[in-house]
Length: 185
Image: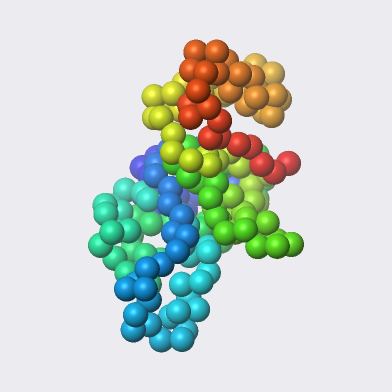
């Protein structure tokens, strides 16, 4: 499937949804970005689900060239808010194989507002995501080993843990294997 926004949004109840692309989380805004905003526009910028997402086909440099108010309407950007409205009931696993897809805003009593929460709300049982920038080549090896083990054992958590340990033997620095975490059921 092509990794464009419309194709991702059209997915209905897959067993596994694996998205390999670029993630973003916009934590703070500069004063320049907030100048001239109305009260409702300023409130809009405070929603963490509109400040995190995936950059897909057609996104280009949208984060550099667009106002934060335009990001949600730009083609090629799937925000966490939009992901929350996907139909992922009975989806066993969503893999967000991209940099920083596990980042979000922490709210006391609520947890992390970001992509991981959105995919869980949309119906996914489990989400694999990254907490910092990842190496593409090593990530591909990690994911391949994970899926191979999972297909053999049927135990996704153990398979994920074992795949990370295997990668760690070849690439001992945590930058290569430590970024990815699994959350959910």
